[in-house]
Image (cartoon, rainbow, N blue to C red; front, side, top):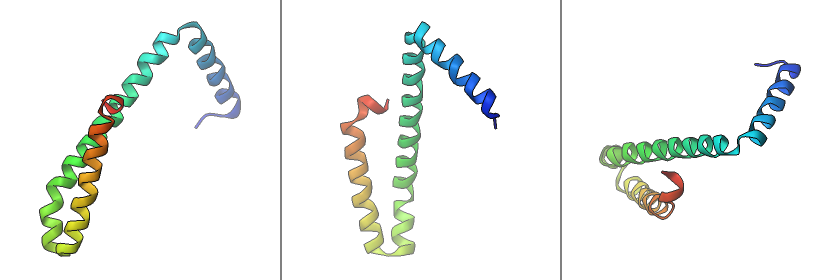
Length: 85
């Protein structure tokens, strides 16, 4: 954790760098978005893989609810695929 003085100095350096090289920050922002999209895709795959076990252990109703949520998740990921990846 940074002290308040160090935090203020870091913010100042960041602001100056953002103003002097905006393309760098655009590329950095795009990398963060891509990483977020990969994590969401991994989570979706893990949840789909665990769906049969959840259905067996928790019952058909829980499995059906989970399946509906996962279909909605897949639809949203497909809809916003350009933003996530």
